[in-house]
Structure formats: structure tokens, C-alpha cells
Length: 368
Ligand SMILES: *Cc1c(COP(=O)(O)O)cnc(C)c1O
Image (cartoon, rainbow, N blue to C red; front, top):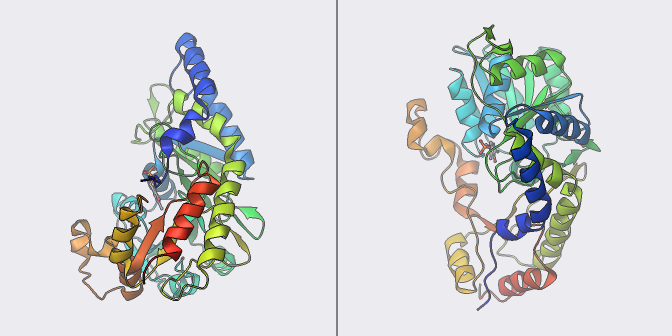
């Protein structure tokens, strides 16, 4: 029986093996492993790719979000609006500053961030809003951009799943005051380890995050604030520079696969397909189906040798970690429905046509 990996990371990274090895050799010989030339160059290249003035790399995506919030002075007594349907890291970043995450339900159509809902949730304690470009689909931001600008609320993008996506032809990373990216191996731009970055046009923010990632210090052994140790390795920066050059091609392959899936499944009544607004160019980090019989479909796919995943099985508000907020089943019914019905099927830059066709025919053959 065939096996179709959910995301074939081995195959993805083998594509660049000889370039990776040559970078590793050079790095060993350089004698300089933290905050050097590779990080500096990657920051320039990624800023330019995102069409913004500044990129500052950090240790991971969670830290990128946390350091943005801390740099803007978010802390105890503040509220930060977050999606109820997201990976828990979005919420954890808020909690780690001492502020409280205020969840809002997704739009019932797109399942992405609901800007109107976010505006309704604003109180006089709201310091920032984190819009998550979930599954690679950019949030329709226009309303929020205008509102946050007028009302001096920080608009932060969680772009951990959306490297290269655009909204109205503008790249994510430049749609708010600042954006957080993750380079976790499975992301569209993934390192061979942990990594993250912030992007912004705000020089004050870029400087502040540079200080916070490096012990609160701009000049060695002079500490202005109590900072952290959250830096991207030179080796990971070198790897990411190689993969960044190939990112658009990889994202295009994902889009071609997504279009094939949408064409093939649009007639299936038992399946709801993702909807992406015409102003939004998704990079298809995940391809998510929704069906009432999710668990049965997942078992059927397993039997066909096709790996699937659930993003995510338990929403943040029902996690033990967030019991202090006092939510229960029914608090966010749209999110809960999504978490019960969603199934991610394989999509990735190295998936061949034959593999895609096998996934398509398997789902079409599903005895619903
Ligand atoms: C992956 C992810 C993060 C966290 O990134 P890490 O690098 O794993 O810390 C944050 N938000 C979202 C939406 C993510 O998918």
C-alpha cells in the first residue's frame, strides 16, 4: 500500500542538502555562531521579501509574539484580543506578559479572524489585537487597520502560518504595526530547528525587540532592561536564506494542489471546503476539510495509507492551561464546531501529481 506523508519534511530538506552542507562547513570555519553575518543578511532579505523596513530574528514564533507585546508595553491589567480558533501559542504570548487574552469567535463563513467581532470586544483595557492568518489564509484586515489606527490600539499579525501570503497585493508582515513569524520546521518557511522573527516599519519597535532578545542589551555588558536570551542561530539563518529563495516556488506548488482539491471536492455535499476571499492570496499552510463525520473520514484515510491531522483537536479555551479564565463547553460554539469537524489532508511543496491524484480519488471513493 502507498503511504502519503502529511508533510514530507525529509524530502523537502533533502532538496537543499548540498547547499546546507556547504553553509555548515563555512560556519565551522568562521568561528562566529551567534548574531553574525548570516542573521544580519537573513534579516535584510526577509524584510525585503515581506516589503517592510525591518526584520529582527528571535528564538521562535512564540517569543516573536511575546517580545512584540512587551516592547509595546503590554502587561498586567491590559487586555489583548485574540482569535478563539488558533494555535495556543497566540494566547500564551499574551499570558506571558501578564495581560489577559480576550477571545473572539471566527467569521462563520471563512473561519478566519472576525474583524467586526474583534472591534465589538474592545474595552478601555484593550492594548492590542492579534490577527492570526490561520492555515495560510490572510485575514481581511481593512476594517481593523482603519479602526486600530484611529483608536491607538496596536494591530499585531500572527503570521506564523502565512509566509508570503498577500492581502490586497500587500505581503503579510506589513499589514499591521508589527508581525510575528515562526520558522518551526513544519511552517511554509521552516528551519532545521526552532526560529522566529518580527517584521515592522516601526524603528522604535525593531530596536526594542533587538534589545529584548539579547539580555536587554545593545552594547555588550550594558543592560538597559531585563531582557531574554531569544536569538536565531547563525546556522539556522544560513539554512533559512537558502530556503527563502525557493519559498515562492514552494508556495505556488501548494496553491496548485489546493486548487486541484477544491475542484475535485466542490460537488461533495458531505464536505465543506475552505473559503478564501478574493482579496486574499493564501499560501495554504494547511488544507482543511470540514465534515460532520470527521473521525470516520480520518480512519478511512488511515486505511488508505494517507496521513491526516487535526488542527486543532482542543480549542485553547477548553485546555486545562486556561481553566483560570472560567470558560466551558459552549463558550465559543463556532470554534468548538470547527475543532470537532476539521481534518487537514496532505499538502506540501514536494507532493507529486500522482500523490495528489491518489488523495483525490480516495476521498471521491469515500462511501459517505
Ligand atoms: C507555530 C505557531 C506559533 C508558534 O511558533 P513557534 O515557533 O512554534 O513558537 C504561533 N502562532 C501560530 C498560529 C502558529 O501556527
